[in-house]
Image: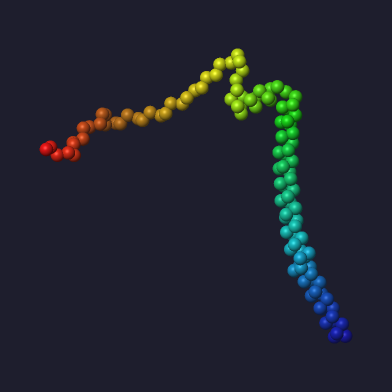
Length: 112
């Protein structure tokens, strides 16, 4: 009877080892579930990007407005009947000093 109990305990320990520690155990399964979830999120982001690109391609194939918008934004093109104005920003002026004009500083040179 003692041999049977020892054999059952040995089998139980071996099965627990396979369940928790071995390569195909619970830890590996949990790690794979996390990796699958991350990959699904990446796939969803890429699918959204693909659908946006597909819509843009279809718009470029069918409409002239998208082509014109792309030419204006990317290449800076204008139509023949338009006038282009470029507005340059002025650099900020230095605020006037509160003491008025700068005072003459004494010369550090010695007379000869």
